[in-house]
Length: 252
Image 1 (tube, rainbow, N blue to C red):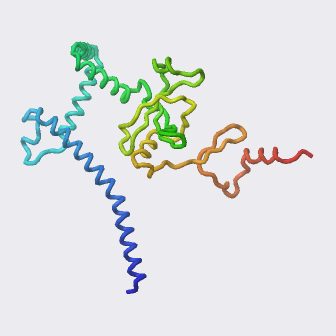
Image 2: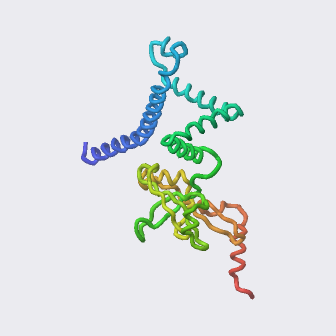
Image 3: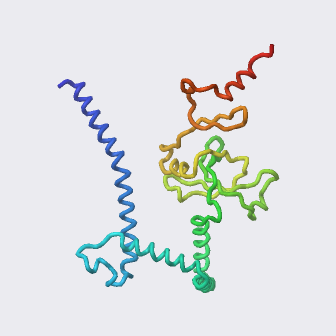
């Protein structure tokens, strides 16, 4: 067997291994995270389940995920009861009781406001992805642009016609940590990518970038999105092309 054939065989084996690793690694990591989450919830919930309702008492092996199911049912039931008048009165009483505790009321109030903002539909947490020159001129950082809201900071520092906007600059590879900055609207370069695509770009350290679509505007002002290609055979002339050709001809 020649050296060329040996090199070709090793190259194929390496490519097969890398392909299998790319397929198996995300599945293994996802399964590990899901299994760890299920085990963590079970360790918290199962000790409070009565023995006669716990299937681990009757079976010779533990049932994974039973505590998670019980937790989901209880949370849904609490949400159903809170939506009623009696449940809302009980929750308000508990909140008033917590409001009298100096240290607890601050923690509870902050956490409740964060969860209401993130999980409810009362407002958008982030509405757009943008670029800001940071930490110096010529260096651009990816930021998540929050919705424009009138705050005390805007009243103190806003310029006429160029308001300050709160932006969150996440850190790589953990987008849950970062810096909150107030930047002039004119200094933010908006991007067309979604919040999910921006988060993927941050987590992957720039290796997973969203696909860029070519965008054009016709003479009628309509926006064209998607890759450009020649029209198929037999297709009629495009309105925008015919208008542009007609307008480019000299008048005779």
